[in-house]
Length: 119
Image 1 (tube, rainbow, N blue to C red):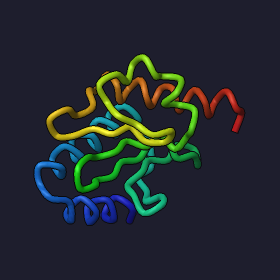
Image 2: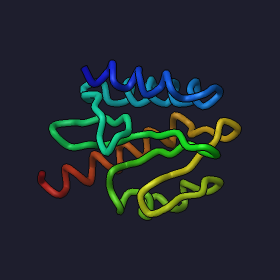
Image 3: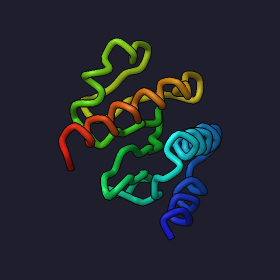
Image 4: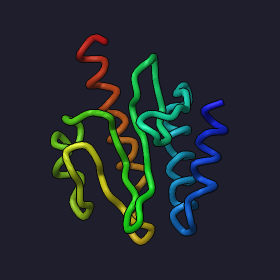
């Protein structure tokens, strides 16, 4: 059901953002094939062993990658140059999408955080 909810979310996103977010979704799926797709806080997200590890959203002037942790982005500060961010969201545009390598680093950091906390 959540995959269809994400499909519905993306169907309501205008191009070119829709294509960028579809590519991000495919990247996350390939990097974390055991992740369950879900909706969390009204946005598309991915859950591993009951923990949300990533999410994405479209906004008027940008898109956001959300690691669902306030500590992932500060830890990766030097790897995030060129992208604006808040404590909990990394912003990007269709002109400057997230690289597969950066998405892999973000996921790796979040999964390590969960493992280290012993959830």
